[in-house]
Length: 305
Image 1 (cartoon, rainbow, N blue to C red):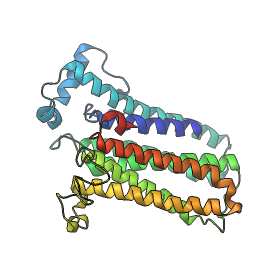
Image 2: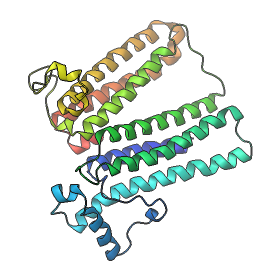
Image 3: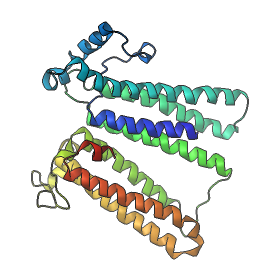
Image 4: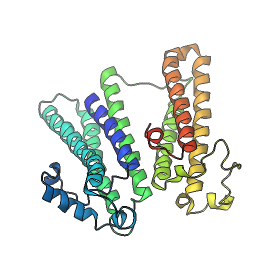
């Protein structure tokens, strides 16, 4: 469980770099078996490059790209897909062995196989996302990108949660002074923020309104109006998506500050103080990096961090 959790975390990191380097459309076919091997000869490289030349991203944005430049974006996407295969095999093979050797309690089996189902679903969604950029668009659908990233974090959370459950070998009970609903709601807010962050990335919304705390001298983006915020097309407007992303961050910080105060106020919750402080520091660091990313116009190193 810890190994797969680490690999999924690595997958998210490589996926982020694949997105930031605009490498996601470099492999235009989904060959589950034969795709394990990269091009091994000049002819194979040229054939792969020729497939890329047929899609809008090459024709409209990268028509001057050389074969060597293509190899750079190819390798990012290839490593991303290869790691996906490694995760699937590294998960299912031990799972089957442990199932037949009855190493798991039956009440945990459903959870473990559900995670495997999500891993398979994630592979399908990844390809479903890529297909959105192969015909008419020069990039992938930002909605599909958001689903892809959010599901990756859900898998990561479930893996880590099952590890903790196995390690503790007991059910974690809610505390009357800190009910489950508060940290659970905090976790949901984090997942929502990750989803909106993927929309920001998919729309390249981090490259506009490169100022903070105001958006070009205004709290609300001046290229939109308030009614756009509540319209069905709100997530199609880059400035609105960036505005939402900023403000969810403020809400998450303030909400977790309330949780921290509750923990430090009650001696019965002192066992959570170190953990809550680490999370608070991480939140501050993440907000700081988000601000630097905005100010830099989504400079790749800062955006990746």
